[in-house]
Amino acid sequence: MPRACTVRLLGGFQVEVDGLPIPAEAWRHRRGADLVKLLALAPQHRLHREEVMESLWPDLAPEAEAANLRKAVHYARQSLGGKEAIGAEGDVIALWPGGQLGVDAEQVEAQAVKALAKGAGLDEVADLFTGDLLPADRYAGWIELHRERLHARRLEVLRAAGRWGQVLDLDPSDEQACRALMRIHLAAGNRQAAIRQFQRLREILRVDLGVAPEAATVALFEETVAVAGPQPASPAERAQALLARGLLQWNQGDLDEALQIAEEARELAMQHHLGRELGEASALLGMVAFARGRWPARFRQEFVEALRLESGEASFVMDAHLCMVEASLAAAVSEPTTRLAHELLPLAVDAGSRPGEALMSLVIGESELFSGRLDESDEWLSRASEIYRDMNWESGRTVALVRLAEVALARNRRDEASRHLAAARILAERSELSSHLNVRVFAGLIEVADKPDQRDRILGEADEMLRPKEVCGPCSIGFRVAAAIACARSGELERSRQELATAERIAGMWQGGPWQAAVWEARAALREAEGDRAQAAALLREAADLFAQSGRPLDEARCMAAGAMPKP
Image (cartoon, rainbow, N blue to C red):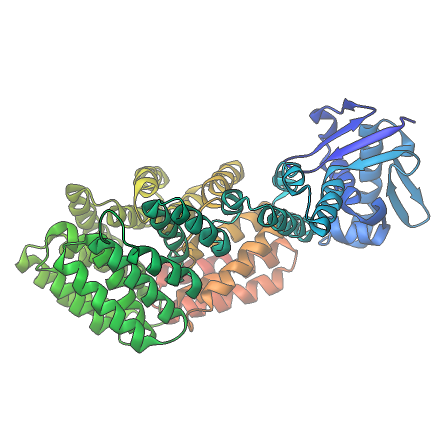
């Protein structure tokens, strides 16, 4: 038997035997590769056979698990070059039991522990972390705890070494690193760099409906803005400081203080024609109103006042409320939002406000779609899309195109739906609201794909685009539901469960309504894949009932058809 085996898990999977790499094609049987990975991560590189089967094939019957284990051992031995490579004594399975075995993840973690204890050699150890643990196995549940532990250890080493930029590369929301870099910039006399550092953090945190930086980070930014330099703080910087403080009060539950600060920031933005800051102030005001159950009145006020603004400034205000408009349409009762849109549309037309006309046409078109009136929906959504196109307003047109794709799909016009989504994808990627829009486009792409290989490709592309970036949670629920269903149907049950769990958490923001129904539908797909057809049918009945209560007849009909239930 060869004397030495090296298993590399960081940044990818590779095995060497006596210094010679085993070619990738030798691992064409995934069960053998998975067994080697699992044992490489296990304590002392050995596990009881029951632990192996439960980790790798938790959804199979005992007989199928045992058959898979036998095949995995055979394939692993074949790839590693001999029977002795995988020991199977009694009920214990071991990797490379009679020779020298090295696993990079294990070695790096051990060196990290020593360096942290001594407070020396941290830079050298930091360079040993050459990538994430088995990135190609992102959704394998048995890897997750190991991945999280190594990720945390790597961050611990980087922080101890003061390599703050790399900390932010791994975790862009790390506030300790942000503050450290801000202080470094200030010590070097670079006030603008410190401000930009904070702005990047604030943009990342506020994506998910208004998460504020920590109090210490906000205080440091306020000090940075107040620092006397070649030029005093600009109105935009003062407004940003106010908005950061306002978001902090919002997160702490002090709605009165958040409201007062948002009003002050809004006034400053209006005075100096700061469109972006005006939009952020409007968003904060809308969030406070939403929390108090007063959003429709606040939106009406913001909308009417925006009709008097220049088109560019009005667009920021409209975009600021876009997520809350969509959230209100996903409520158990969405009729008030629809009525409000019909009331506000004539005001926008009379005022000659193209942004206002486009947004209200979009809302009406969405409402018609949800009610199953496809011709009317197509007309309204096309009107909105054309106005947005004429204005070069990417965010609104993206939403309109995604909804037009839903209309086309409901008519079984997949090619037309695909064209709408292809255009929407380009717009979403370059929009300032890409963190809200990209995930909506990918949800549509999954729905339109009618072949397993197409869905797998789209899911892979979604991973590449969405994972490195912050994504709005509420905006992502459609994608999570679609991904959970697609993965269940393709047999990727572990990922299906993960996507479903995320969807369930987000849907919990609503009491009842279509997103709760969508989650029931995704649960049904998972139960079906697990072989429990009776439970799947019961879940589809629940989904159909909830869709019916939410005024979504097309969705209700789909669930009834999937459950083979005659419509009453």
